[in-house]
Image (cartoon, rainbow, N blue to C red; front, side, top):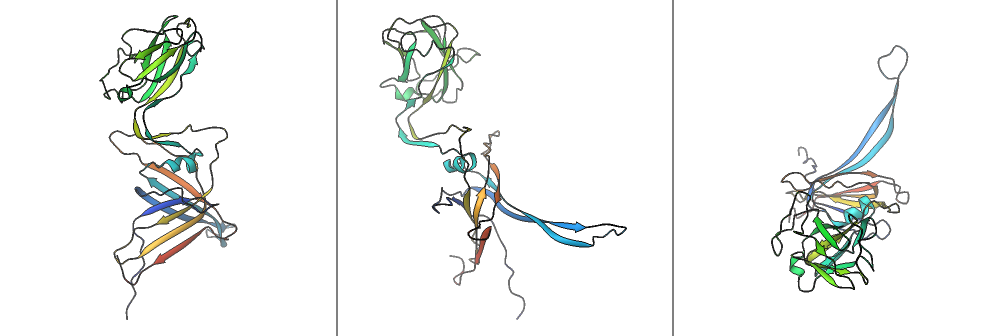
Length: 298
């Protein structure tokens, strides 16, 4: 009769984290470099006297870990690894974050400064992605600086004016009594305060521009009250040529941290290590299932 074919494990197909309370998936990961489940244990030896060999050996702790090499950045990864669920807006027509004072309090000021910044009607195609700084050049004028030029070719091509990243050729005069002032070729306008404008020179404020988009995702990470959850993970190996499939259901998992890799001319790869824990209700850490279907690969 001879020996039967030895079981082997090949490749990775999919990793799906799920909510431990509802059982529902957070989403799924398919672009993976690896998914390694390690159940490495240690041996505790009793030594003593002149013997170079142990007198007794017993099993010590097992360190149950899963290591993922993830090559995609799904929104839910920030929720389960960083404790922050991102906000996603689909089909955004173009928008701008509210102006916020950075240094001093006179730039954003409802009466004597800039009351608000907004998208200029009909100029949505000029909105250029990025963070912008507004600096009071005088009591009534401002210069604007862009912290990135990654989107300067959108709409009308733009360029920096100097090495300090200024984008205004000359200071903009902020109109008082609620008047508006356009930031040319950037799709936004400033609304002046309700009174006479009187800013303090060198005070600054900031805002962020979002161009029209199919998808806009934002997340403020690192809050004191952010909560990183425990979750479950299903790992499925690649289906083999004889139809064999492997599935690992890890009941209770914890991980903290998510690298964002930006190497030269390379896609992001995030290496994440997770710890597997005992699920008391199941009295186990995980289920392993291997199936070799009658019909083979299909």
